[in-house]
Length: 147
Image 1 (tube, rainbow, N blue to C red):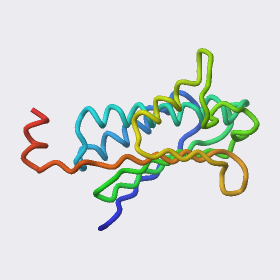
Image 2: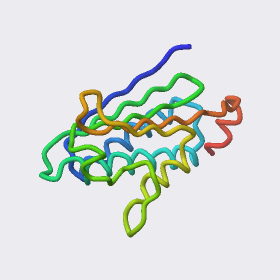
Image 3: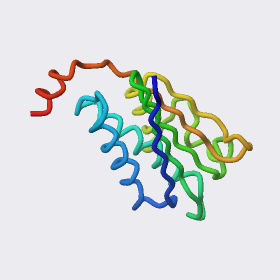
Image 4: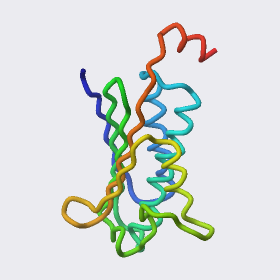
């Protein structure tokens, strides 16, 4: 089974969140993903990237990296930043949150099958790894579903 990988990096600014969604839309055209699931995955990637933009870089200076890996049975979406990290903000912590914000991780948990949130490799920043297993549809079913 071969893996397909798409990577992008963009400034941690809200104006660039659309890039992560557009890349996922392109992947969705070439994979057995229903329109409904694709919409859910776009919401999940937007929430994860939005957390990096809002919380990782208080001064607004930094980059967010996104990787998509599709292996035929699942799609993995990885959002990474080199910002101040989970411990400093508490914003993206895996536990339940209260208040007006904090719904992003709950939304992501609802959409994906596996969610991993951890510090970056060098101890800086945050890595959010989301995996969604795909139910492979027969090609004819995919074609009629898009009409």
